[in-house]
Image (cartoon, rainbow, N blue to C red; front, side):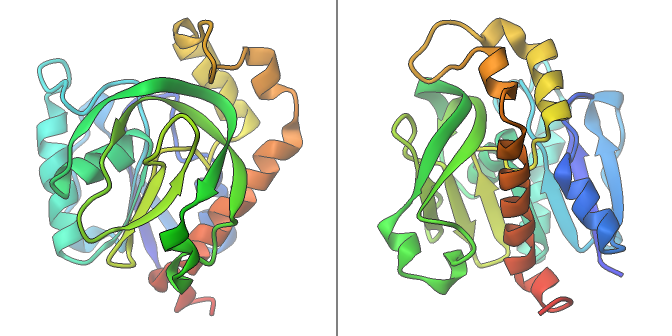
Length: 236
């Protein structure tokens, strides 16, 4: 059985559709709720690590002391060739571990906006799972530089670094494919103060208006997961 472990930074940003996908395939799913003080598992406890999002920044170690140990843990998972998936804050943490800068983006993106597959990604089968254009769910202010040696997956009008693939088994996504209507509602409830006037910031009712959008991105998340060597070997 494939074992998936996720790192959760706040109560309202869980694995979303990833949990449903794992359950449907009979994979084990465990968690470290870092905001509760949970410890990190040993590396032999899991095959795949999923690093979730959160409202904190990766450089706020004074407020969130576990960030320091989390970075070391992610670094060890990558070095030990685990499958690692980072979403939003998770992608920023991976980029930092791989030696790149994380900093405030030029513009915040909150809501549904398109991302575009890069020319580099169009030329490799490693990114075949991702369409040339997709409208996806965003909630971020920070961004990162693409790690050296990584495939630059996607960009948007507001943010050039929307995703990367490193050594085939590490994926960082600035945007959210795991978000369900329920989890989007929780984000709005807990982080609604970030919803201000902005070119790439939508009002809550617009974010929740079309339920089919969540189904579409969740399907895309399923496709991404199944494209990774760890899972493709089980369901070729």
